[in-house]
Length: 223
Image (tube, rainbow, N blue to C red; front, top):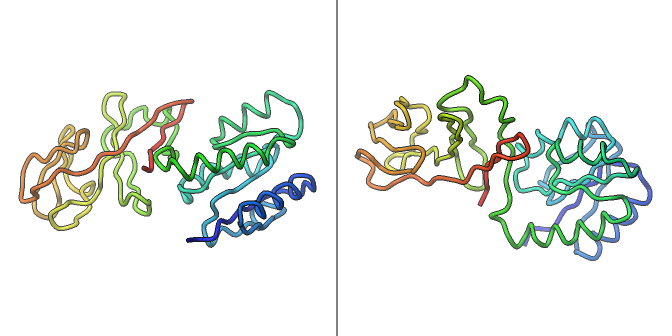
């Protein structure tokens, strides 16, 4: 089994002490960094914790969720400010907790995170970014669920396996006619909304994946 790795990006002594205890209780390794730029995410951590009042962390969340889709990304709030709390939630943190409750809530969230991988997801874009964009809006290759292409049609977003089951070509590089994609290698056709195979030589459908649209953002489910 992989060693659980927890990373903190803060110099808050109380938070560091509590996270160190949490890591010890979980049999995890614990590393802290004073800034986002100094943080090392290799090997991939299971948890990243950052200060919700750190502007660099707020800016980095979306990139982290794209590059580290299986990582739980948490923020702590030192001051009882609703504005700071809501800003952290809007940035995309998976968990926002008060400084004093962080360790307890992190352990509970992590237990749910590990036991229910279907709840894991990554941010694709803001819903507002979809305006004027139809067809393929994202090609995602390095994911736990394999290569995925994301499509936008008439206000709805769909995600489908981006590998042709016949010979492994990237489907999204083929011609898209409405919701039908044609494999660029041998011409197999699929409905990217349902995954249905419409024409061979492929003889099976492609997988589709759940897409959530909430809080002004589009998320891809990773399980």
